[in-house]
Image (cartoon, rainbow over all chains, first blue to last red; front, top):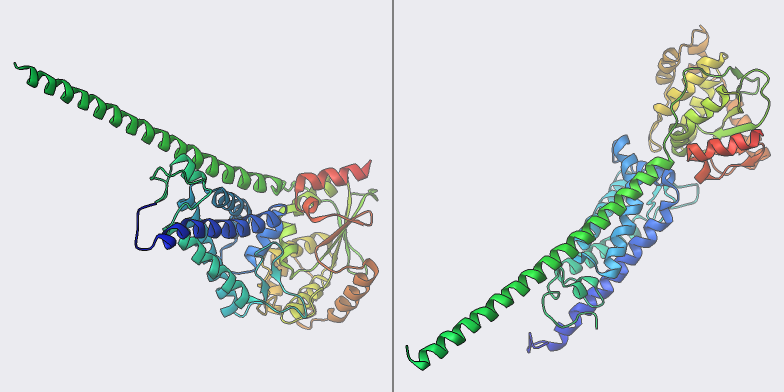
Length: 175
Length: 254
């Protein structure tokens, strides 16, 4: 606690901010994965709609993405392997930002398929690319924060003493 | 050796002992962390691997058998694939050549439909419709559907149908051009001398649109692919899981 006398309040706040970032990012990932995992075919179609990846790769991504999102999301929520999980989550979100921007730039009219669904939009439906990009970019930032200041309060990493800056002091992070 | 020196040696060795103990404790702690970290990583990677394996296994396609059940093009443009005398259960497939989910259905469950028909376990009926109302997808779909209607031979039709899905254009581009369709017709073994002219003139476009409208209204279709088993729609999770699909259809045969 006496680490920094200059900014004691800021120092105490950082782990809590990390916790919030973890919960938001992890929660979004788990929700997104859970909504997609029941139907791999839909997931594959949604990935293909971006016209970004060659067929076999798109199929593999369609199968892998939902479970990857759920596992990484759960790791972030419980604060286990926080830094690695945050790196993967941040990269995923960055890839989504890129994919959506690609679809937009190429004049595709698709649903991002972020939370299930996906594919071509029907008549009268408008793409929500800007909103999707802003949301995912915000999530990239949460990932970056978590990578910089892991693992935050209420993290298994802290309790187990593995990984993260605050995991090394013996303060009992989960209190 | 004086008494003072002895005390010093003693306390020195005690200090070293403590130091050694601390080092050992640190090493133990480090080992514990490595084990915890490794265990967590292995479990996480295994969970992802298991999930991918599961997704891939429920969508694993059957191997298409060598023999195809007899295929008959009906006057209205629907196409029946069934062994002689097999009238039930009826599997109606409403699909659009331009629709990506239909392509995915053909990729995942297409062989299952073919096999079930060849095994005499189902009467499969294809209804190629145009569900799109926007360009360029609508015209793409109409051109493809119209070209398929230029083929009277069942076996050639099925080969053409498979080629259309294999070469499906993206939804944002003009595709299924007359030249492509004529080429794929040749590849599918179409020998009818009138085929090229029929495709170039887009002769069956109106029939295709009228049929699509009629079928969509009668069957209350709002999405493709829609697959009905004896008139009841099969839900997507079953439809896109070949083994479950086979079970569902063979159950209906009893």
